Figure (tube, rainbow, N blue to C red):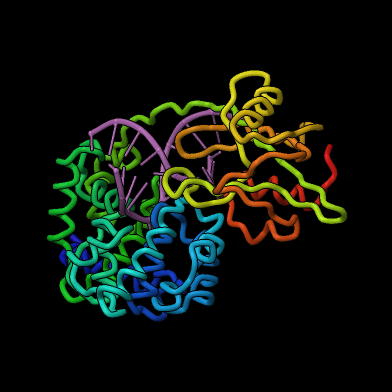
Length: 359
DNA sequence: CACTCGTGGTC
DNA sequence: TGACCAAGAGT
């Protein structure tokens, strides 16, 4: 038996972290605002993806007040491309709540944090431990994976029993007084050593303490449920151009404040089954009472969302006449970049600016 | 609980 | 190349 085996698990993880922990922008200054923004950005999002967004965000919104006083379009523009846009809406909502109800001061205890929109069990514990050094275990996907292997928890990850086991282990192993660094240490460890596939057990400082490795089942843990099959949809979008002399404007629609790509702008579109072009024209003529002509296929884009796939065909139309209802807006081709969009529509917008002539 | 919610990387 | 996955939260 080596000396190492008598050193508590938490201490050994901390020792590994001191040598191998990553230098990340949000670890330099751990004020609650920066920790909050980083934790929300990191929800289901890779560190490498978040870094440039975090830097841009801090430059544009350096504190809660500046965020609370900005507009939804400003926030979504900085967020564009990060995905899960309800996070951006919730950040703005929360900033305004904190200014109005908390006198501009970030709430300090776990329960108040959990009540804020966009902060659940994980994020509120992460903020409490990292920004306020409270003894709270922040349990994320990394930590579930690490503990399920270290203690060989062979229970489906989506059961409440699994969750109870992990929480108890997390509470027992939490080094009091250093919870913030310890939570981050476990996440770095999960992201760098105890990987989801092909964990680097030969480099693992906890190899002798890992029940799963000892029993050769580290690649079978954690136990994940089977994924549900995702459907494929057909979609048709309308690029409706209005030419007035030298000026060309295009019709955009603001999406609903709830659901997919909430609050983002898009080229008006419909789900279709067959005969896309004609069906699109017919449905726009009747639904929006627009008179359109000269339709032609502009481009086709395939895209995968989390739980469904789409093939979207964009058709170009020339606007003639008709009433434009609310949520629609004529936009200068040169101003398209100011309207936050999802990936597919941004791609079409870029192509349109590059090649304004119909194809 | 099951489903919704984005995007980019990996194999 | 399609399936899986990533510092989850809301409904």
